[in-house]
Image 1 (tube, rainbow, N blue to C red):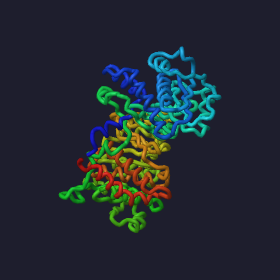
Image 2: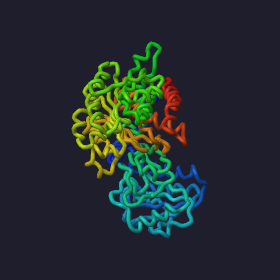
Image 3: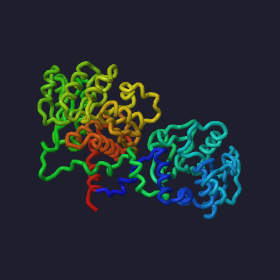
Image 4: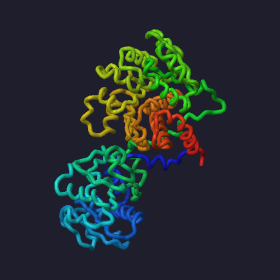
Length: 500
């Protein structure tokens, strides 16, 4: 089993939660100066571990981020670097710990302007960090633009200046870092786009904040990782059999749209569902029968016959949407599936069909459900959230409104639960942007639900395995490739699960 410490390093703290962590650390006896000294030394270490001594420019802001920069400047100079410090504002205007650290710097402090970005080997952004509350414009924006165009190694302190630490959104303009050094825990903005693209490699430095402060903060957001859900993974047992591993029912669309259900069905089967059946309109049966081998088929005609295919309660996880069509028939089938009270996964057309009346869907969804929209499908159901800049906040609000787990897909997929828990996934490669990949994911989540994995954990696990499988394949990936990569990922997970 993954050790407890590994789980604890996955928390993502909001800006306010990080301020609270600092406050609690200081209350426990760690001084603010100790925290700042450790932070600045961590930044300097990120530089010296990558470059031999040369020329370094430190861009310092008027707050504690700038204080970290002054520490890094002092440590780098002691290590043999030629260091220039450029300050936004006057040294005399600095306050508190930042003023103290500036006082320990014996070198020259230059005013912040474009001219400071000259022949440098390293540029350190210690301007604003996560605490920025307004867009970066004017002269500071020009300095950042010139730094971004410079071939030097670019290192950001906490988060790149201009990136909102909570949402990952750019405020005006933003520093483009090769390395970002943050402290104690990551923030959501390190993982959410576009912030993640600005951060480069993110290093988390221990600055002496006691891990026990997390008990008081009680964060509700994590970076998605097996440590969060591996304990509930449904490994097969010698005493088990296929019927004990669940039965997933995937609903197919008509003859011209059977591919999506096929992708989903094999996703469910590969992730471990003991049995998988594709329920399909009668005209689609020949096409599906020619594609499916280990997957069974169950044709239906009208709504009554479809309802009959749900009579067997052993079909304990139902997936609707992929290739189903935006039709009255799809809406009726969704209603019938939700009325069973079983685990239901809704994707694609099963969501879009309610775009004109999303409240009708929300009234019928329940805690056993998972919905898996991409942005287009999401905004059809939640049009009022279009102006909300934070993907994490959008997903949380929507999950609460829908009353079920929501998977808001993308390169920075967010899985949110109505109870406020959320994970951000960061292991999905760009190769996953291909037709049918989402259908495989929906099938994987449904397959985990069939095996009894709780909705939130099933969604988080499915998303992670999906991304990991895609990473194993790499360039040239098509959706069908994902099935074959899943066993390798499961083997990786099984290795993590061995007692140490």
